[in-house]
Length: 310
Image (cartoon, rainbow, N blue to C red):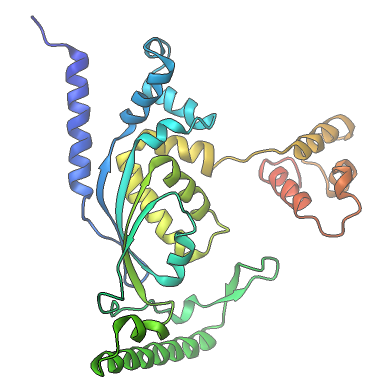
């Protein structure tokens, strides 16, 4: 009796997936000047998402769609439960200010390095002279252009002096017998911490969608991009492809956005790209009397991205 070719394909795919895990596990991918992310363990792969979905859809699904098509359908239509069946555990080293943003994503299991029990990690994130950024004029929580090089050099020198001084104070407290839980209180937010971070694939993709976005702070964006491209992509290649297509490289049109496009299409005398004057004439009535309107700005940006506006 000949072997089942489907079984051989499944076994081969499983072997390849395990080889990928073995290659990635405990490999430290550097981020910033002294941070890293690495894979500790993973439960599941692309097939786990498909398997979970077919419990709901039944055996007949395989006859009408292959695994890639099903995964893309699930992500495209926001059927998230099958993605919760896979989990990934990371070890990360990250500055505390960046970690503050990270742990706002509460749908994960965390065990962090404790400076009550252990000495604080002797490393702080430092800023290169060319990496200091101005405050963005249009975004209260964002960055603008780089500061001049001479200003950056002064700021970097002051930063190193400050970090070295605080570290010396911390060390003297420890040597004087001060409890670790109290000695740590003046350490800067640039101090690195380490943590195990375990999260299911659905919530990880949500984290990546927000933190890889251009509006996220640069430092956490670098962590998210490293996790996504160096770890998630090789572990879940089909899911990653769909994630890029339907989350990162897509846009959604709101009800008011759709109304603007419809009015432009029916009223404009010329074909796109449409002018600013035509856009304002077709804008949602609720925006018309507003001097500043973020929703209007976002709509304009979407239309420009699609080549529908000048």
